[in-house]
Length: 120
Image 1 (cartoon, rainbow, N blue to C red):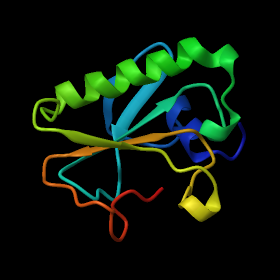
Image 2 (tube, one colour):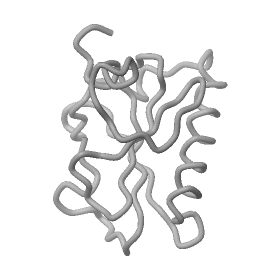
Image 3 (cartoon, rainbow, N blue to C red):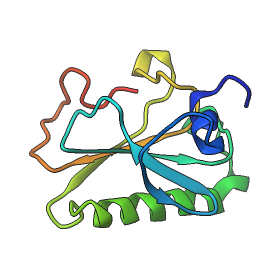
Image 4 (tube, rainbow, N blue to C red):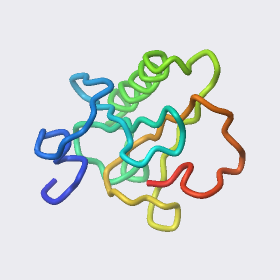
């Protein structure tokens, strides 16, 4: 989608630090990390948010979950624990209108989150 930051990252027009790249998903380091491990997992296909996902995208959702688990394993937080967050809409803090999941770990994470711990 023209003008979408994450579509630009997928296209290689915007630099990112890749963590995982599959046929349908891309994972990269957050440029403003809220934890020692803070990776964004996105579909390569533009989808505005989880609110826009339908049953026809069930396979893609499975791919995203597999990518999240692979990132957690690769970043060595699968055993100790990690948080997965997606924000839907402006009031929830969604800054980029492209479905994305924050994978955070590497330290004890408070609940409820404070500050920018789950922003974006």
